[in-house]
Amino acid sequence: MEPARSPSGGAEIELSPPERLAVLYAPRRLQALWEGFLLLDWRLADAAREGRDPLMIQLRLAWWRDRFEQPANAWPLGEPLLALLHAWDSERPALRALVDGWEARIVGEDGGAELGKARIEAVCALARLSGVRPDDAVRRAAAEWLGLEPESTSAPILPGPLRPLVILRGMALREATGRPGGPLRDFLAILRLGLFGR
Image 1 (cartoon, rainbow, N blue to C red):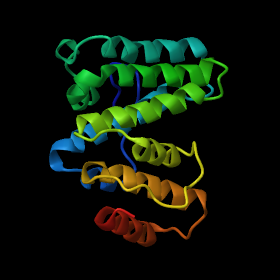
Image 2 (cartoon, rainbow, N blue to C red):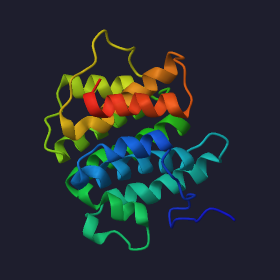
Image 3 (cartoon, rainbow, N blue to C red):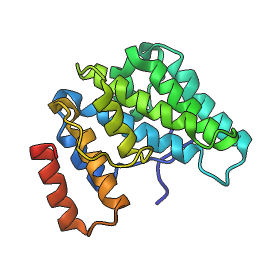
């Protein structure tokens, strides 16, 4: 069966099992914020994947850019991802910058620098929406999760609402350093990170 198509032209995207578990470690009121952010990043990556015609990439991304230039109450119905992103209304510029970053990575010549900055700023926006001030520790954890900086000698200490970032960072570093994997080891690592934050 073919994946469902959104009005933006993208296939229906699902989070990976570690991402789904990471989202569950956020307070319940914040889980949609995390899920929406992660799904949007996947959706934009799919829209801008290499090998597609640059014009088609720009058209797909333009649909999302147009949405984030509108207030959330003007967004069209029928796109489940937009429904998840309603709580981002006050931080729509961060979402629009994410779209611009994906476009620059594919059709620009910046090597992904703009996308990296946009992703970090989106995490900072998510922190603000969670009631957390995005300080250097938040920025560093986001950069390490995204592979933009090497692992620091000490893990950043982040408040509870940002526990998903702790898990995502930890799992990305495990993968980057080639630590033993497998579903059980990954689950135990996520459990440790989720419970203890390190």
